[in-house]
Length: 425
Ligand code: DGY
Image (cartoon, rainbow, N blue to C red; front, side):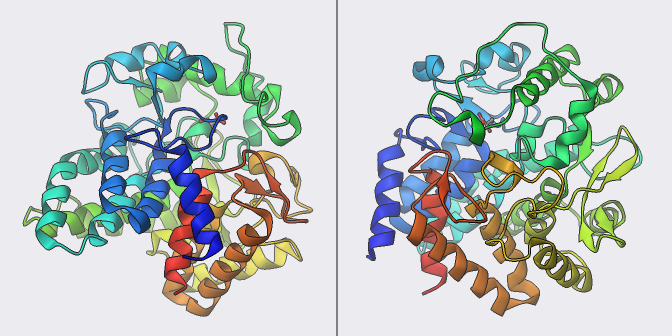
């Protein structure tokens, strides 16, 4: 094992909480949904059974309607993280397995894509099928949740209800929300700036909006039509929408392997792909962008989400190639992929999702590029491995200097490093 692989394995082992992996040693003490998807791919390189458990423990947090929440709280560690389950009181009544503590929102269904890949990594076909058959109903229901509980009349694309759902909490693509000036009704104290400098985290105004939206979701009893009437934040997120399509394909593939009927019909997926092109492709920008349902307009903020979205692997190849070129041009000499191109309004090199390079974004983009530009995919993987070899297994990286930022010993950086090392063999 190389030094880098050994360091990455040591991070996963140190952050291992038993049935799930803390995203980092102190900053994030619970289980996060899309983190666990990425993390399981790293465990699959080290210990297949542990990878399987990572996914199962996340699915244990599922709601009766199929949603898998973005945070599955550890009751022993509630003091170390804000906001806890008390900010999502009605959510605690939605869980399928009584006693599980969860947030009230979800994440892009990377977990489903990971469940396909972890299964495929098991060489014993009997064991693989037995495992898939235990997780299959939850995976299917999670993907169906976006269609059945998160769409509004007139579009098959799901509505994203909170910046935390995207995982890109304070990206400039969500800056329009600041104009609404939301404030939660209760006072609160942040804990996220205890371990990481405030200059690398979202601002106070961001947190006011995040918490006020949590209150709006609770007041809407998690009913999408009701929330749409009350909230300034209802979007079609380009990355969530792309990952949904890939996740639906993953569920269909697992169903076929199990001899089950495929739950997502080809006609449904084709209609979805057409809606994606219609809503997200911006011809003038030459990029896939997000869409604000409240304003009824595209969000004209270029970010790497439009490139990572190629991981959906269904987009028009000409547009996919063009978005890659556009983004490289906008990013200039920055390291790949600056999540916001330097020089764009809202870019901040060191602040969380406002510019830094994130390893999961590069990993998704490389998966997308595999389809139509394999040499560029290989180059992006190589550049990503160079960055972690040089700067460590940090949470995110300054796109101008490469310096590691946020938490040290970040689990998905470690896990995807292991996956990238194995893909580059
Ligand atoms: C955090 O705590 O910063 C997370 O991104 C919210 O889920």
